[in-house]
Length: 477
Image 1 (cartoon, one colour):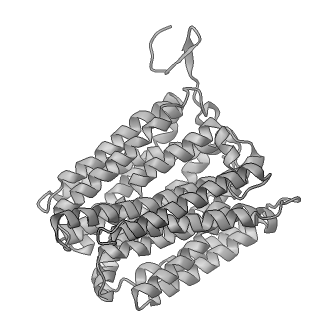
Image 2 (tube, helix red, strand yellow):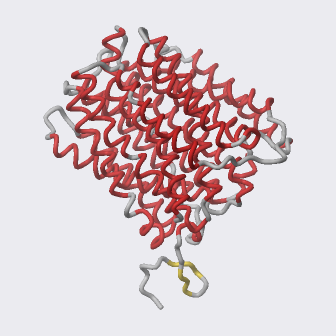
């Protein structure tokens, strides 16, 4: 990698770090915020879901805005609004005010993350793609690493409001570096924005979340949630029809004809259904289910990020040796099993043992995300990058949003079956078992990959015997 590409990657990582700290700190602080507002801890999942939802809704605009107005000004405005909304989150005095500020934070984050990634993708050659992703994610992983213990410390010894205000200095660093090192990339001939497509896909996404939330709190009356879900599916179907007829739809479904991109989006979406619930469920289980303090919870959960950070040094070698298919298929099973093991945690489980399990899970989860993200862009040309970035980012955030909702739904269903409104450790067994099964469903997509798919980006050289691809570990000649 060139020095300039490394500097661009570091600027992108500042944007990622803000979002990662924000996400991981909030999970640790949710029980304290719920107490302060007099709310049900499970219902506080909306403060996480609305942020992810706004990301999913507004991300489709990011590619068009970057092409129209340039990547540099769009990024600078977005990161500035993100800092302002972070301050507003810290000043909130009710759950409604916090949810509104989080929505603004998500809308600005929808432009920050994909535009920053687009700058990197346009600057990086294919052979440097995986390495560029590593340079981005290593600094960004500092956020999840320090987020949980920092959140626990702030909640215990200061105030939960500081978990949002710490975004400001990180954002300022990103602003200064972007001003100095970003080049303003824009397209000369930009197609008109697909407003009709946006007005179909945005309410479809919103109604999907509303339907999940309504199902979780509908007192066993499925009519209203079913109605929201039906309208959401109808709008999505209308968008598919619209996208097939339009030359430049806001989300280009034609990209799914590329097998590697399709596997990254569809398989990655199914996998993230399970992963999205983890930052919500784990701190809640430790604090509400086991009675640990916020600081104890943060000191346990940060090991997940430590495992993820360690994997970043291994991922390029694993992908080069085994290829994307050889990594994604077995790794999906390993991550799902590591999530299922959490079902056996109790209030008496030693901290060190929980830490080891989470370290192990974070290690292989990081490999999965690196492989999925790199696979999606491995066979695309630079003209497709803008549309692919918006599509991929929207799918990621929408799937994480659904994951949080599914986690809350699993908890509420379990409590309802017990005839109780209070969380118990058994409720989390149901939730973690559910999301483990969801992750395994992604295997149906990853097994369809060929050994040579994405070989250039992975620097993988599949060998053959009689014209049949075989892994490098095969000793036959």
